[in-house]
Image (cartoon, rainbow, N blue to C red; front, side):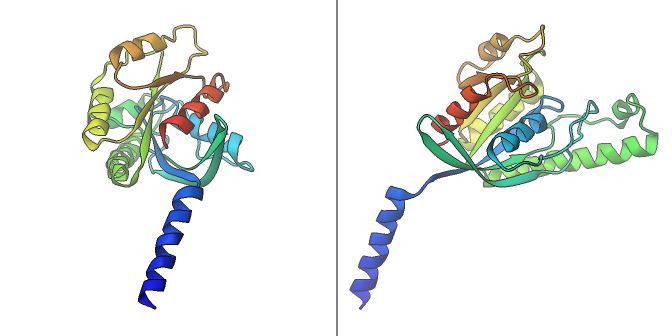
Length: 212
């Protein structure tokens, strides 16, 4: 009986390896206001029955807790991949409550948001232990070679996490995805507008190819 059970178990594992659908848990990372939640909402809109991942705001650190959406089936390149996506809080090396007061928040509200944003950064770092890969979203209208981006990429490389850079906001006239590619040539990159949906089909193809 032991031999038969072992044979059945081995056969089951073999069948699963052949027919199992590709699946990956992907985190969306990047500086505040780079467009992570806008992109997360776009992915959910394109590959589910509706809904959103979170609110979008001009105020930095609108997302202060990681939000997860499971079971999104993305089809591209003649294959499919099942994604669990995690929209993470904006990464920052310094969070000052006075920056929030510039957007009209009271001192008490600003301090509360700064505290929650700091906790969110810590949570985002912890999520790296449970991910299969990362989409690093950068604002292509800004200088990419910042301390935040360098720290994020260094962290991903140290963990050997598959990384795909997303150069966002190409709909804006001052956008320069080439600057991002020049700053981090060692990683694949796709240029998109998450807001308008421009080139997102190419992003889906890259996701299907990169996170096998």
